[in-house]
Length: 275
Image (tube, rainbow, N blue to C red; front, side):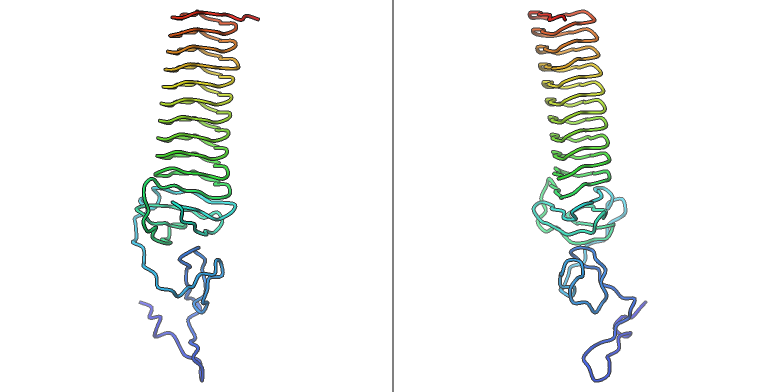
C-alpha cells in the first residue's frame, strides 16, 4: 500500500513539504482534481483541507438508480441546496447522497422526500428522479419521475406519477396526474386532465381533454374540447366539442362538431356545423 506520509520530504531550511506529484485532492464541492499543495480548489475556491466525512460506497446499481447529465450552467439545486458540478457531469442521487460521475461528492444532510432537482441549462441526456424535478432548459432523452415534472422540451418520452408542465414532447406521455404542454409526437395516457396543442397519436384520459388537432382517437372520462380536427373516434363520458371527426362520436352528454365520418351516439343534444 502506498504510504503517503513516508513519501513526503521537507525541503531544506523550510517548513514546506515536498509531496508526491501523483497525489491529487478531489474537491468535495465541485469534483475538481487539484494538486496536493493547493489550499483552495481551482474550480470553486473551497478549502481543500477542511475535515470531511467520507460518503458510504454504494453499488453501481444503486448509483445509477437516479442519474442525469447536466449541461450548460453547471449549478444543480437539490431540495434547496446548491452545488457546482463540472459541465456535462453525470449526477446521481441515492439514499441521501450526491454522486458526480459515479464518485461520492457529499451527504445531503436533512434530505427529505420527494427529491426536488433544479438546474440551469439543458440536460442533454435521460433523466430519472425519485421525486419532483424542475428544469430550466430541455431534456433530449426520456424523463422518468415519481413526482411533478416542469421543463422545456423533451426529446423522448415521459412517464411520471405526478403532473407535467412542459413545452413540446417528442415521444409518448404516460402519467397519473395532469399534463399541460405543447405538441406531443406520440400518444397521451393519463389519469388526470389533458391540455395540449397537437397530438400525433391518440389520447386516453380519466379527466377532461382540451387540445387542437389529434391524429388518433380520443377516449376521456370527462369533457372533450378539440379546437381542431380529430382523425379517429371520440368516446367521452362528458360533452364533445370539436371540428371534424374522422370516426364515430360517443358522448354521455351534448355533441357540437363539424363533419363526422361515422355515427353519433349522444345522451344529450347534437349540433352539427357542417362546412
